[in-house]
Length: 388
Ligand SMILES: *Cc1c(COP(=O)(O)O)cnc(C)c1O
Ligand SMILES: [Zn+2]
Image (tube, helix red, strand yellow):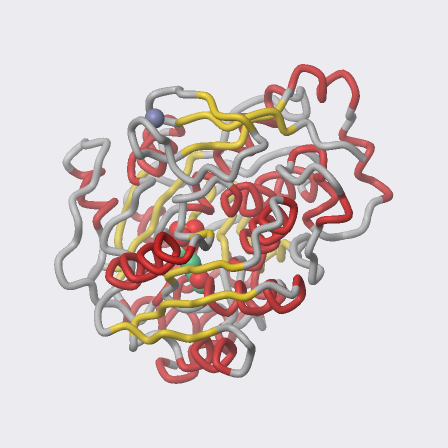
């Protein structure tokens, strides 16, 4: 297997950087950089049937991931999570083709595992030994696990109100857990300060190009698992936005590879009523989002008052003809109960938000009864006992 990773490119100013350097954000405009691949060559050398006999984890897409030597892969079996046909829940909501991609099957019980598997593998390839990350909860738990597997040291900065399960899963490892009096953005400042002072690599959301590459594998999987067809709509609970921009990037790459064709799905960005900077920007038809004051929601993964990738999230929503709406915490919990009762699937509150949102989008006429609609359940309800 060989990776077709060639270089890094700024999503804002287009500056190009070599793939051989651990660059985090654009050195000229400080915006998000993406990993780029030689897709022309991959198109002629890799066919989608190559994947038929590979192991069911995200590294089956090695050609489109940024690690050059397979020996550097740090894996706990992440990815290739099931897509449930949610017929009972769909009937209840009035949707004929409702699908749930269940990311709670990942190591550490959330899709943060995908991003951390990619980033920790790449950091290992660079021979970097120490990492930092700010986290609302799940990213910290995932980093602690992958750093342990790789034998690397990590320092995790979480707001004090991060879910107890995620605090504990970090606390019992060799990672250091720093509880921060403030929000995820305050944790981010402390994380980057330590990294800058001690020469460590900081893994803040979209402030390095590798986590998004891990999360983009959700897009490849959705296509492969649906027989190289995409649903009409994808509904995503948005915090920092790595997942939604990763899936959108994967769709564009698969088109260039000639693996998919036809209509792209509409991308729907869902946020909590108490923390909705992207939804507010969408309603103002803006490309950038102002920071949200005093963010408040039980869905820790969506408690992100400002995102460096705001314009990438909004571009995906605008380009796809999707939309951005909010749901309340009570609606999320109601949907968690309903989905476990009707489907036997225990969603996290963020996943519950996508169920509530699909009903609202149907009522608003932004979805049709016959549309195939895929919800992302980004993690397990078991990590949120204190709010359920
Ligand atoms: C991090 C997280 C999110 C938000 O993901 P982004 O890709 O950063 O937008 C949603 N749900 C859960 C459970 C999370 O841990
Ligand atoms: Zn730039």
